Amino acid sequence: MSSISYHYYTNIIKNLANKPSNYNWTNGNNFLGRDGIRKTQLRPHGLDKTIAKENLLILKEIFDKNNLLFYLIDGTLLGAVRDKNFIDGDNDTDIRIFYNDIPLLVKCVPELIEHGLEPLRISDNEISFVKNDEYIDIEFLKEKTRFTEKFDKINFCETEFNIPSNIDEYLTICYGDWRIKSDNHNWVVPK
Image (cartoon, one colour):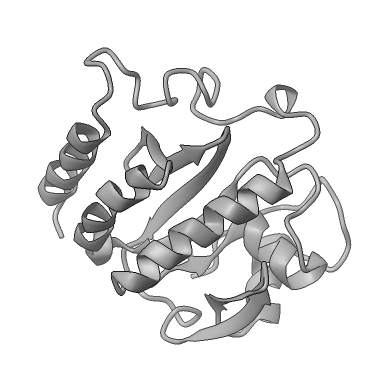
């Protein structure tokens, strides 16, 4: 899918969202702060785990029904594997879909909106949805990696989710010694 197609699909999402014409898609009309990232000071104690779980399960049900494959990433993945829960202090839920599946995502948007998950932010590499002040970042993977040729499964939020294969190596590349809770991890995207 070309960048022209990407902009075509994101414009469809923007139209489905029915936001005012002056809505700022870069930062969710300042929901995420000036630079589009929810700062710790905006949410010093992290996300509400109950609401984050509810939102993720709604999204999963809709994606599964529409055959849209996704997998857990970033702090959500780390929490699922290490803590069996969302990480204390995390600000959002993180998942990834394949770039070529963006048309399937667009197909899901009306149902996501119907269930209260509103489009919040659109950038070149992700789309965010929000419900009850908790948001989910959906990132896009353009090319499969050795970790995404096939997926392993994990029980998280009492439901089975896809995670990258070779999870120990994947998380080690991402965070170094990921088994130790720390605010100072050097985060790297595995290739």
